[in-house]
Image (cartoon, rainbow, N blue to C red):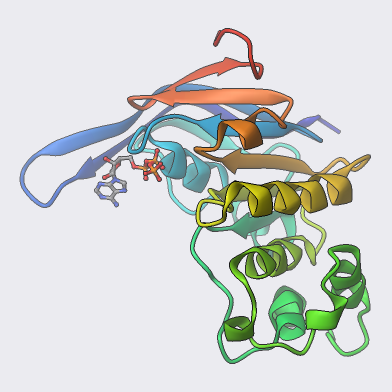
Length: 226
Ligand SMILES: Nc1ncnc2c1ncn2[C@@H]1O[C@H](COP(=O)(O)OP(=O)(O)OP(=O)(O)O)[C@@H](O)[C@H]1O
């Protein structure tokens, strides 16, 4: 079995901006997400981070280049089982409790959330057991993002893609969020790719990918991009 979960070769993405104008958002991106990797995706606003995450997760298709998921399966098999997604803005369903939000992917995949203890054990491991019956409106931003991360993990994905999950949190809360997530993933093969503007968050990931005008430069935290 290969260690490469995702392989991108020469990825490009063009959009039309509503006029006849075409904008190129990704340019010739080569990338590999290996099992167990911890990747910070950094770069200025508009440099293409979200666009790349969407392509890695099979939410969008590149205009040019090839994307494949050797360690995950075919495009059709990616979601919900293989890839968990977390977004910047609160994405919990307002009428569902925290526990129901976490269980939702299990239910959608045909599981029985009432007998499956995965959601409850995730809530406990994220220090959220007491919040199980709360509605999203009763949660703080940090709690809501931990619930969203628990939901992304509940089905046991091999890859988690998080798009600025702490973008709306203060830095202390952002750190607590990553403490929880990294502790939970420690020793597992689950790969994590996090788009972030927070240098301190990026420094906690083993690998850094820097986007610059749609190009991807790779390196290690604190080191030169290569
Ligand atoms: N569907 C779309 N149609 C047209 N332009 C788009 C579309 N999606 C993204 N873009 C443009 O592509 C560029 C890159 O956007 P993207 O969201 O990938 O950047 P980003 O690095 O994630 O930015 P931020 O850090 O602000 O989230 C931006 O100029 C954006 O306006």
